Image 1 (cartoon, each protein chain N blue to C red):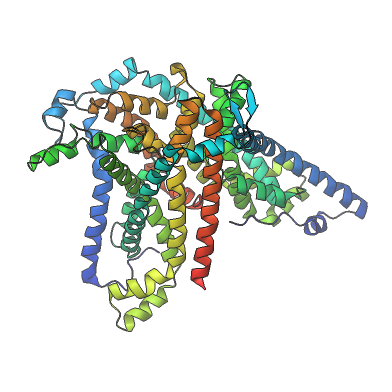
Image 2: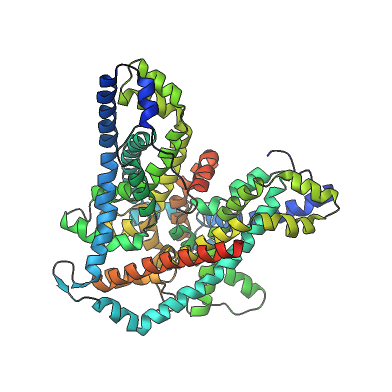
Length: 310
Length: 279
């Protein structure tokens, strides 16, 4: 992620021509115009993103109902960290990490198949993208409908002589369905990312390997996968982050955190603390902790990845 | 990039095609299943969940329209998303062009700020933004949500357009300037048309983000008359799961715009989502 360097003043003024004095005043004008052009965006981001982050920190150190604020130091943090509910929710969140290897595996399979560019691969590529343009609320409800008590999945189970399963009544089955929804929604996009990594491998490497007598599977193991290792790791890191920040939509429409708190994740707990129990201070403290946690996790994963590279 | 891979043995083509077809079915089947269910009566659906509708009915859509105000929710979504998109694109085009092509003081710091706030998850923002907007009297008003959507999407939009305008040939902009074109004229008559594919890609991407957003839309518009489509659907789905054809109809209505976009602008959708990788 690199942004292009700002226009070099030397080049700009050289092209502009005119005498030295005119050049200076013209350049000053350009700087002012540039600053004025960036100002609306800066103000909006300051007001609605940077200030709220600071405000979230402020709220997290207070006991508040939204109107009055009473400073209690780290009170919200210590209270949360001692709460068995948070430990349980954190554990549940870790359980959702099961989805990560499954998504990665599916994405690798999918991208390797697409890479061969058999007939119709462009159509498949667009089709695999469908889950990505849909809201998590839509995908969650799709799976909720498919796995509901009188839904099609249970109809199939019954057709084979089984008892219908109430998927959302137990923690294990509910998490299973949510993980399935996560995998379904995620692998298409990630296979496209892997496909673009595959496409940047020099095809001559494959041709050389083929000439040396390496079969399709051998090429997959010895050429393809090692060459996209970097991107696979990057995609894994993003998946882990996603599991800690983006489950809200699924949980909200599928289980509302239940039964009990069995499918409540960290991001859903922030919502329910703040907007169902009006514990805004604790909600903010949890949001800050999750933010710090995923930040630390990213750094650790990146460092681990770099040391594994060497 | 177009022909079949050279190293692929001819006899391996069929298994690979079948593998892809299998994955395609696992994506398409659930969507088509629900699309068909939406046009069935509840009795017909319960009698045989599989199979085609025995008679096609629009009853589910009519009920959604009349009893659950889905039409109003659709209208609200269209208002919020189109206003938010236009405002955001205008602000981002001006800022992105300036950052890419004008000597903005502190440009490096500004870019770094935009990139780092892109990483802030919405869970961190929702509580302070809720309190902020309620103090401004903007909770439960469409302009409040529009403002939030514009602002939270801006860092990525500006970042993306800075890169897009960075690809516009500098010599052409200089030529325009020598001919006497000022800031607005250079931007809208020269730079914007040249960066049009990037702008279209960003527009598609931000449209999807706003259309599909749930948390802010649900919290910041608590009153029923101002519900947007996605939270309205979430509520219907939460309450009426036993009426699967009805929920399916709601799913189809909500998913229709994004699907049409993918069908007719797949190039922009896919390049946009690839660019937002790691956002």
